[in-house]
Image (cartoon, rainbow, N blue to C red; front, side, top):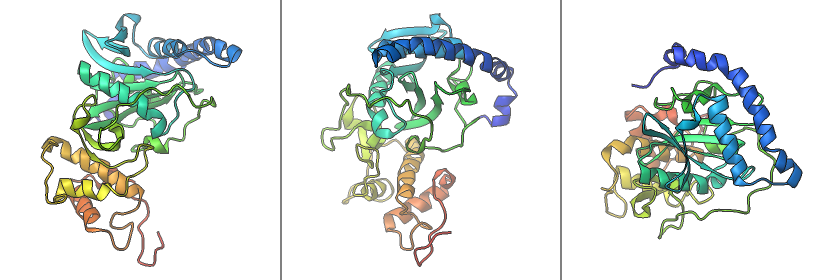
Length: 323
């Protein structure tokens, strides 16, 4: 059962975390500025600088210790362990390399997912020393854990979810609007030029797109386990494949039923497809005459009581107006 905000806020560990956060965050910010001095001096900084910043964030701002950190563990940049259990795997890029938009994060997330699959780690994060995005691997997709700006004047209380006492709990929004997607992130950007050092991304052999473009990912390191393409490589909705993905789950696609997605993963898969459909305003209430595929999806999400997770917006009237 997922904790409520009130339950989390009543925890003594959470209260201690919040009490020390302002002072620990100031200490981290001072150290971060020192780390970035060479970037100001030389115009750029190596990936090692971002690694140092992330380590400072974890040990100065949060409550991890240096002994919890494992560098270059089976090719992963950083893995956090507690009592011998791997809790969080972090892929790190040089300062200024990432942006709060899907295309920018795709390569780093794909690497992190691949390493996490090999090491059986359930939570991953990516960072360039300015943004820090963490998520859980859940039912073939990613569930947000924390979106943090490491250059912010104040630290979001959602940093709790990547703390020593918060990392093992299912995350809920404590200090940010719930359900905000990465693509809609309005946080500050570093202002640095986009990275020219784009790492190789594992692509599906047929569809030529990374794992984040599929509604179900069985194993991030095995493209054959990626099912139901529904987004383009730039993160936009693939309007050509989305209806087929919906039919493959809820009825049939070209006479075939999909049998390779576990039943337990289906609710989350439906939500991912529903979010995409809502973004292009194809669901009932958003358009006067929705296609049968979108009506099926809407009805299924209503039945499993997951409609509230979609960004539906104001209803669309028959004359095309909203409100």
